[in-house]
Image (tube, rainbow, N blue to C red; front, top):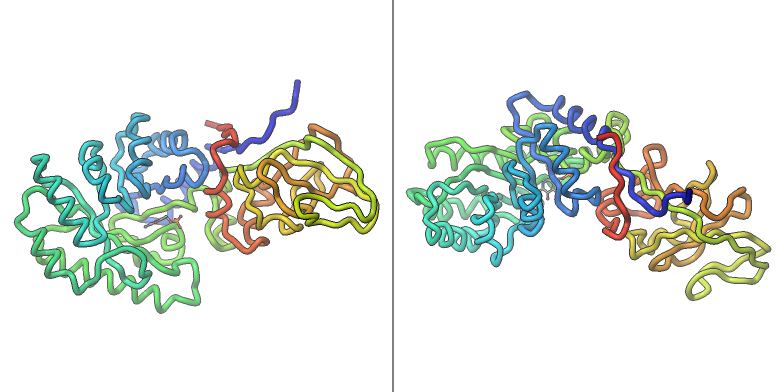
Length: 368
Ligand SMILES: *Cc1c(COP(=O)(O)O)cnc(C)c1O
């Protein structure tokens, strides 16, 4: 039987472990929102969401409405928060029972108009406030205007109040983060006083859950932790990486000193050597930053560094000192040599490596 080809192995038992671990870090009555945007950080949105729904997640979060529609089409009935809905998709939010994050007064106006036109009553929305990240969000100064639009408006109801921490993973920025948390609390208090009812407050992402338990509030939003990474070695050891990326050697060739390898002669051999071609490239999500030896792959227990430029569908590695043959398995990252290790060596983060793995790479689900 031929060895399996390039694949992303997704360990659903590891996902369950991480879910239970992160839940153990928050009070029992705090809601848990699973962030499954960007194809569940590359792990495959539908199978991952189905498993998390079965495990009992209270909420899902995606970035865009199209991602939420994929979940609804797959039969997911858990509440879904859309973190960054675009104006042209607000109507779909209502049609597919999605809860939008309202991040500007313009989006608020548009959404209220749709809710009214569709005869909605108390349609649940979440308001996002900027407390220092300076990405999307409304400013505390806009509160009177926002409240004016929201109060006595029967079409909508504020279900959630959201902010996003800028540096929850960087303890050198502790003061800044504590200030964000305090600012958020003050905004929430003011709004709830005016509304006369309480909302679901949420601001902690994975690193927030692990580093700032004073900011759990009524719900936390976790993405990367579910997939096994805690942005810190101390947290990583309690989590289990869910994905392992594997490929195969498709050809082995010998070259002489002076020969070059890959586009633009990007690697030049000093002496005779042997290289192997791996069936994976930047078209699969192995970005060009991993070329020129910035990444190594495991072949029969030994490290083989990349040679020169990563091509679209393949890259070459040095196997001069490795016993191997065509068809041998190649590990790009797994539970021991992790996506986070690989990303860091090339100057990026696990998030980018994982979310970049393209749909062309077959996902194989294990241990369901
Ligand atoms: C992506 C995202 C998250 C999840 O962050 P992790 O660090 O992966 O846990 C939470 N909240 C918002 C607003 C996000 O954009």
